[in-house]
Length: 131
Image 1: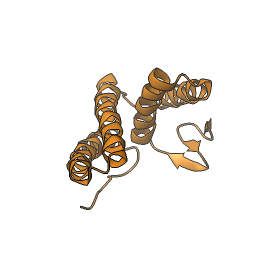
Image 2: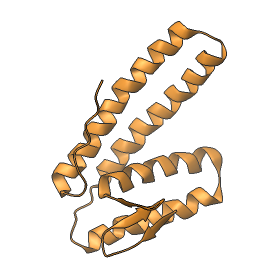
Image 3: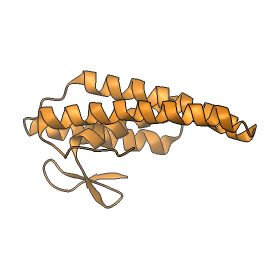
């Protein structure tokens, strides 16, 4: 659960969460709400929305396109994860390997979006993925 701790810093499972991570989490929660209908996700979604509003009150410009971009990439990855599970269940390792590579490429795009948010807001830090 996300809880407010100071004016523009938030705890998520005991850790401070910067703006790019909150926006990413919000996009994932939106997908979970659409697909799983769990009230717990809705509570966490509202907490993340409140965290974003708090950043706005502190003077951060929050671009809605960031949420849209992260939502689309996470939706794409959600589908790839589903295909990956099915390929593994069928023991189709060749197909699973291809899907895994697509997931890695997709994740690089996700990291680039989060880094763009960091660069434009100064909240958080650069995320660097190796391999």
